[in-house]
Length: 208
Image (cartoon, rainbow, N blue to C red; front, side, top):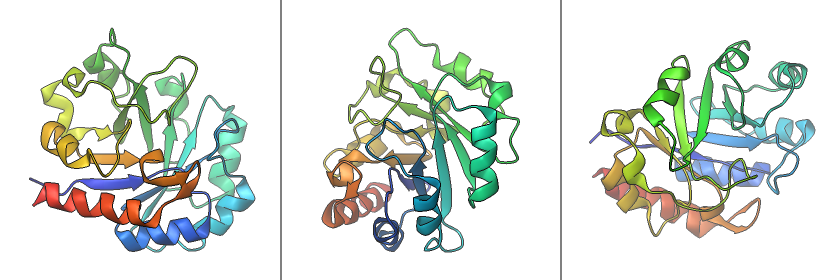
């Protein structure tokens, strides 16, 4: 099995960024969605980005922002990837000078293959749990059987992941990457050192 990449999302401080990096995260997610308890301002994000070394990606998460707002983020911050979590069209996602990830919430009636083809210029597709009115970060797990076999090795798996279920998730789905936020926190927006370390350790065990 190839190594499963790890994105730790909802980073809100330089200390949590350092923790995630030291644990072995491949990417850090910064949330630019004001209603989220993990929201960071541009100024907070600048301080976080200062501690991120080479070869760790900074991912900027947006939800139905105006083009001007996304342009401002890209201009002011060293964002490597944009992650769109709303109802953004492919043409909207493709107009910025950054590669992007498109998050898709797993409604039972959703045609996953159709959505993956629709966003075929995305660097990757992230699959997350669906709850009406909440664009992500629900802490809920969806039915992994809904993911078509032919796409599993290319997707980023999110939704309710935590140290207790990550090995099973990787062994069942065999995704390209996993995305965790609330599952490694002691409170919303504050990462728990032991949970982060345990999560990364169990990903490594699943890959062995």
